[in-house]
View 1 (spheres, one colour):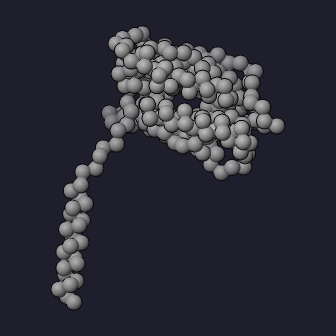
View 2 (tube, rainbow, N blue to C red):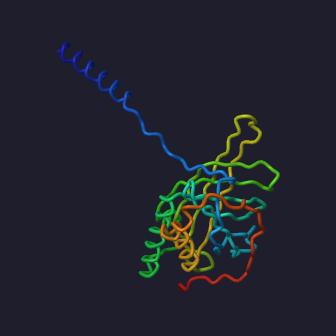
View 3 (tube, rainbow, N blue to C red):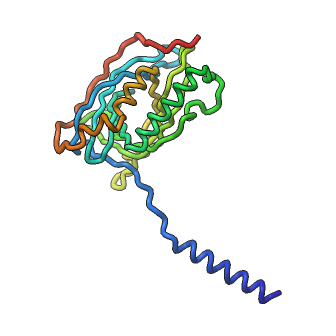
Length: 235
């Protein structure tokens, strides 16, 4: 019995050693520099929640889309709460968005959307992205990877397809006082607005920009705000 026990321990140690020698594949995280070659590929509209203490509501704003062919990344640039955000999507996350919108449209047509559904904000998946944000052009430029959830919310009695931009962490190894986390921001889309973004994310649409070598730099802008929100019909 003792020999059997020692033999079992011996094989267990060999197994643990074998597991420790297996190389783990590094997790690839998207990173992009704003100075990398890019081109403006259009503008889309979406809503942001600007309510405070029950006052206000959704505001429609214009967001500029840029394509970075070297990284095969699409950037959505917008300004909220006095900060400019550059939200980057790689090919995998863009395809997930297109599939998520397809599934949302099926649920919408089948009236399969509920105000009480648990975790509706992430019903159609979560993708990894990259974020660069700063308050002004001359202030610290923070950056970090983040999760973006795809789902829906009900606002003003109407459903909206939504991207929930979770917080990205920036750690400055040279000055810890610069460490910061970006705000959680929700982007609300009508089905027509989401379809416009899906069209920009379409691989066939982006192939025409694949051979770009250089272009202008990104400019910080004040978004257009329109109080009229054409919500999707529901009730």
